[in-house]
Length: 196
Length: 364
Image (cartoon, rainbow over all chains, first blue to last red; front, top):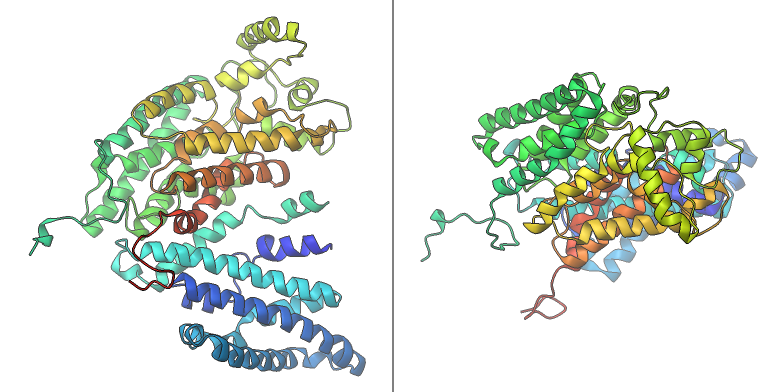
């Protein structure tokens, strides 16, 4: 698949949040205001891009030659955890306010299934190094798009009278569901017709 | 101290309008009436039953949820309008439980859970329609042959006939209307007169006119109950514009951006290069007029500023083009509008008026 195809696939057609329903934890948890949502989006984008490149290298250079492919999942989790730790230190240094806003959700990227998901999907699709990186980057962009839109909608809902039992997380899930309904317009046929 | 308890504080913008919500809703419903009557004339009493059932389901849902939340909002007409629009957006021969589910989904899930009228961020009627369109694809795309096309064999809509026909087509038709003539798409007797008139005007100017535009414009085509007659829908908008219930921004930016994209890229499917798409064919099919004038203009789910409205309209036009020409659905209007509904809070955020008295960092 071409690089444009990979970008469209992971931003729209197989958006991790709205089509694959991966990585919902930060999507619901950090989407209360736009600033921290965008910060989270960029953090995830960074981690997915670097992680899919790193896991590609580990898969091709270490696991496959040594016949250790069965260790894939646990190795990938370890690599991702190390990357997130690095990111956490960087953010704490560069932007303490963002670090505070992200709070518990930053370490949670470690166990964010979206990051492990893109690493595994990139390996299974037999992408080369650059394709893996582009796939990881666009999966992160798709996450950024979804969480940005979600946060603006939730900011708007702050001023509305939402029925009490639905306030907070339930209405966020309903919102996400309706967004996913609209994103069903971006399907595989659209991708096929667009890039041939 | 000001006695705040006796005042109702609502969300901004607090602009005074000499027309109440209820008056707006009933006015829009009244403007849809000619198209509804045409739908009943064209598709038979069954269409009336479908519309009444949709409206009843929507109003009853609103009433039931009003009992739960102790807020009685039946008389503002919004549930009636939502139900009517659901009825407009389904095929006439649909099993009745489908519009019922669409109406209940629209009122209960899309509107009420967010706090009722004014709080929903997605257009309820369209979300209801899309919900059932994905769930019951077959019944939602089984069309009825309209009364004036007596000799019709197939009941495909013009858009779906073109879309599915092009998969296996290898001829040399120059556009969708030529293509439809080639596959023997039927025309009404009335269309003959319109075509003769158009030919008498345009053929001296060197243009060739295919038959069928009269049927598209006046609504002698299969389709959803309320979407077929562009002519009657446009008549209704005259009153909406006169009362300033809708402004020109969304419909014009929607139709111009969509028409422009069709004109530039639409001809490529027929191998006739750029700047040769059939704009007229695409403007009057697939519920575009209903969507652009009556649904994209919904006050609640469209942006607040003029600039925002223009961005919203162009986005609707772009996504309609994208879905209609490249996606798996022939129409694309309802999906395009609800996709843009998602972007409305973002558009509002970045097109809002400048705040004075604050510095960039937000310090007073």
